[in-house]
Image (cartoon, rainbow, N blue to C red; front, top):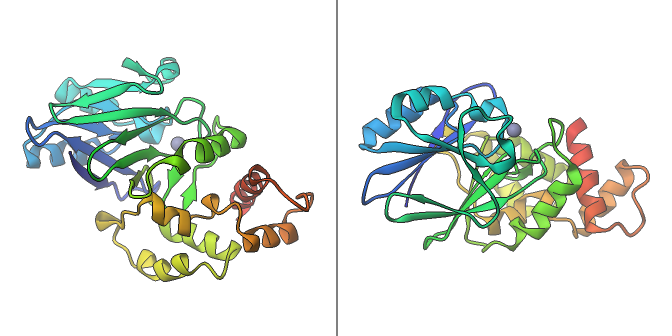
Amino acid sequence: MIVKQIWTANNYRNFNYLIACAETGEALAVDPLDHEKCLDAAKDAGWQITQILNTHEHRDHTGGNDAVVRATGAAILAHRNARDSIPAMQRGLGAGDVVKVGKTVELEVLDTPGHTMTHVCLRSHTDQPALFCGDTLFNAGAGNCHNGGHPKELYRTFVGQLARLPDETRIYPGHDYLARNLAFTLDREPTNAGAREMIESAEQMDPARAIVTTLGVEKQINVFFRLQSAEVIRQLRERVPGLPDNPTSEDVFLALRELRNRW
Ligand SMILES: [Zn+2]
């Protein structure tokens, strides 16, 4: 499996992806908003885009569909309940479905509600596993829930699905918010050594050559995976009125999500 991460350099800081089969050159485009960059990258590599995967229905993920379909005839895949919100969708996906790319790539579909209620992530089972996580999980952060999402669902997705994946899973999110998210983690947990160590390189990072984290790293630097940290809980108690004395991990997650909205 070959992964090409494409930095759009737009105001939303989107990442698009091409996932290609090394044997056949067939490629899947993930959220190809910047259709020109995606089509050019495929052409340069000698790949044919045969499928488009939309992680979810937001326009900054689906806005390139038409142009890519016109240029390549690719089929559009998305969550099966997104048919009304994603025009010309050809294949509806549910948990456990497999998306094949060429001969060698198989991606498992995870149904990951929270950012929206029709959001999927793709997981590869290659030697180095990978997760294409759209706006559910960001490097050092979590998706927002204010355009059709639900924080409690996002919490359940984080603890019930994402946290259980292998630590070596490479994380490929839909946007670059790494530096700002690390700053939020450090504001919640000033002694977080991993976040402290990474923030300078994140601030100087050229997103065209982005840092790719793993789930194991995320569990260190991403406060949304650090729901048991005594420091995080103590800090939240000072800032979030009404947080119980012994908050559950769900209470902590929801408080973090709320605080991040205003931060
Ligand atoms: Zn979104």
